[in-house]
Image 1 (cartoon, rainbow, N blue to C red):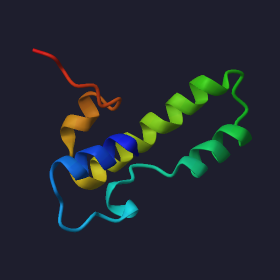
Image 2 (cartoon, rainbow, N blue to C red):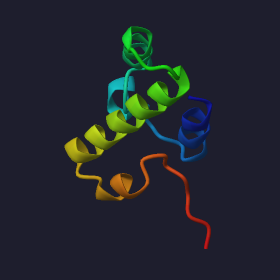
Image 3 (cartoon, helix red, strand yellow):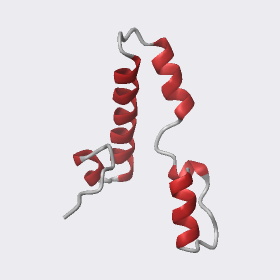
Image 4 (spheres, rainbow, N blue to C red):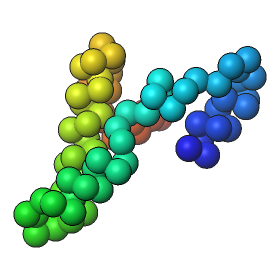
Length: 77
């Protein structure tokens, strides 16, 4: 959220987008899935759920580049 706030401030958006417009996945949903999962390693379960949600959102938005790296890491050239 802090990064998004800095980005919006830097680019002087006249109207801030709603949370639904920029949220990729609902954190509460992921936490609930982790809590209810049978995984031995909660951290791995969290990572798997989060990446799966990013991929799902990428398909919804037609963002094929997100599928190549769902972690969102910037490639430094």
